[in-house]
Amino acid sequence: MIKYLRKRISAYYTALMSTPGRIDDFAGGFAIGLIVALSPWLGLHTVLVLALATLFRKSLAAAILGSLVFNPLTGIFIFSLEFKFGALISGSPPVEFPADISLDLKGLQELWHAGAGIFYPLFFGSLVLGTAAAVLSFFFVRRSLVTYRSRVYLKRHGDKQDAGDTQ
Image 1 (cartoon, rainbow, N blue to C red):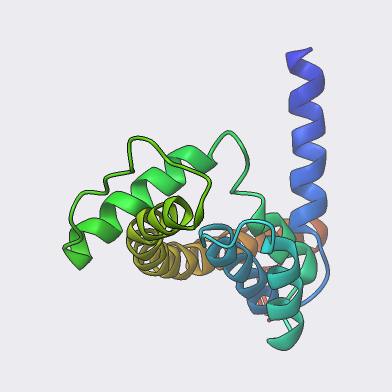
Image 2: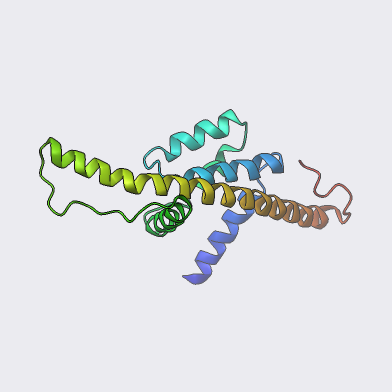
């Protein structure tokens, strides 16, 4: 089973790294996907990723891949970190939810205000951490692609000349 998974992951990695196109477009697409994945706009991630990748003319496949960082398993950790970081930089007071919420207008207003106390720190935390992660991922993905394509070029041609110049 592990051998099969390792083989499949290796095949996906090879296919991903062999994707034709400019290295900067792929790395930029991944960075776009990552910054959107770390945003609090649940339900809009795919639409935002496709719109931004198209607008900036970056790789759609890489953008979708970058957006997959956020999923039900990682979401709680990502949001917790972003909220705590956002509360730290914005100086937000601790959020207190109403003990008993009634379904009348006053109860819904209390719930709305408590939710706003969560959203603002979450938004600012995701903005700062998402931007930092996107910038770091751009350079990491770019370097990985240059290295991979250089190795493939050397295997095929035995000459390092123009190995990483597919930008």
